[in-house]
Image (cartoon, rainbow, N blue to C red; front, top):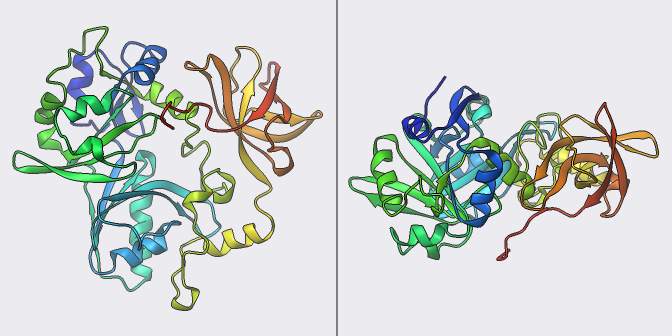
Length: 375
């Protein structure tokens, strides 16, 4: 398995490690619920170095990414991040990505760990099929990525940099650390405010000392504590953020996933041939009134959680399936996401979930399930 530059940090802080997409990653430290509540109340530190980081630069980088991504890239400003999808020709989702525009012809694309090799192969195929002058540099192994998330995080970051707390959401800045540079973006995957930091692997120890200089991680009242992948999943669930392999996938129509904002069907000039991969299929889906199933949020009665693959029913017949589910530590309610027939997506619609052992009463509710006070 691959090890991130923070591997020793995890072991020193008592992490329980698991194999995640070929990486030895912390699933938890003290406990998933405790870590979840730490992020909601104060702040959590996540190692997300397993995510892929691919630099794309050169004269045709913008045009190339317009073909690769479902969202407009050309009008991005340097210092801006943008969430997008990468689709296959049928309109299914190869991956969801964050695109950073570093300069006029220089971009960084962050991809999911489990899809890095697949996306790199896809990038090579698209580049070979077109006339593009650009370079591809997979920087995953030479860099690290850390996320700091929670309502008190910006106060901590402000002690290191006055500029970072002034960033708008989905903006980033490049900061100097001794003789190297790091990217600090106001992004995250928890529904809380915070930042994600991309930096050279060799500078991780120094950066951690700066970030944690006033923090005692062993203090129960510490403003910042390490958090594992277990709580990262329950946090993103409450924020209704999709996860590849659950709400997103090659066989799932991109217009069904609840991220229509990331799909710009009208963004390209067809006369110039500027169309993204999968656009034809998604335009046909939109013209037909949308996909037959769409993603919804569900609140479930009782304390028993639904799991991925459980059947969603209405009036005794199958109507969809669950993609993710958990007991929300913040709301103390069982929540889930799943795909249901288009006619059943209105909030308040009663449904049942067949777990194989029992049928659970559920109701369609708006997403996200949780919003910060500032949202």
